Image (cartoon, rainbow, N blue to C red):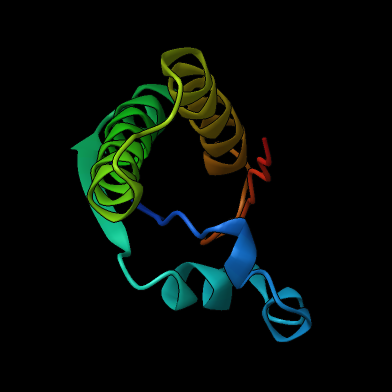
Length: 112
């Protein structure tokens, strides 16, 4: 036995947060983002498995978002903001992951 954790994340621009978007549940919001990135980790300790899955998923989604932003507007996120978003994502993800149940959702709003 053990634990399998699959973490799916996406980044959505604030301009996409229309009233229609706000009416979606969190799972639909992840799918709406278009670039859903999922990470699966298997292990024996739930907290460690959650941490590893969340760490990887949050880093990859922010790397992808930042690269897309650079392509679109010529510059990416400020390094402090970039690292802050990764930390917030990892913390919220890890917290939600260790809760009981099959699936948990969380949203990290960020506007600057």
